[in-house]
Image (cartoon, rainbow, N blue to C red; front, side, top):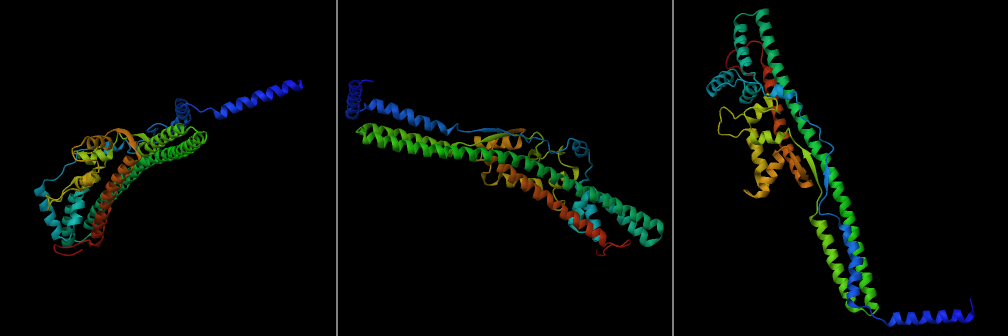
Length: 359
């Protein structure tokens, strides 16, 4: 290129640079620029909530249990129970042992055992001892079945807890990722706000810097709000809901074995005013407005969720469900202790004994 041509180009560029340095941006243009830059950062905040679909929806309670759980069981009348309890107490059985024997359906066997012991005391011989042995074995089988029922029920409750835990872990991971993204967005918004407002102020556009600061502060507030109030949620199916059975307490349960259900819903014969274990558990669930203020819509919604066929849970609601399952599990586990008392008292009895003898 010719030397004079290059000189002309340089001179024109210098004039344009001087014009740009001395020209001030209009406030409207500054506001538009600030909104364009900061709006992009604000869009990183994401939706208010995210939903996760649970992939751990296996049914924990076996369907075959229904056949064993819903059979018709004849329960003795209170008068018959009090009469049988008085006879067994006279023969050295404790109240706890008598109560659990009635729960597992072994009370008639215990009465037959007492009659066999009386006959064996009068006429010793192999036939009498064989009858005693058979009755003891029959009672032991009832106790063993009840222990298996307890173990099976606790395993099902553990399975239900694991289902909720699996979904809760996924939701917590989603919330952690979302918190990191929103934290990064907040940092970017703050940096962009500082850079833009400072640059505009240095360029002489103080009004534009103020506008950029206002827009940036508003965007940061929206990001913080999304971080505080947004939460992940996920669906959990609970068609065979153990919590609902305890909450409603039907006469016969389709999910609990007969022995466990009888233990949970039975009131002591000698103290009919005392609450059954299931009633105590339900009262503990309700305590402290766990489901929300009494009579509120929040209480109704949460009750429907926890005792219904399934729904959308948050992390907090999954933790609440897990605590309720733990309380139910602890109550059922106490049944093993009373079964142990019955086993000990049976083992301490000799093959022939009269009324009033201690075990």
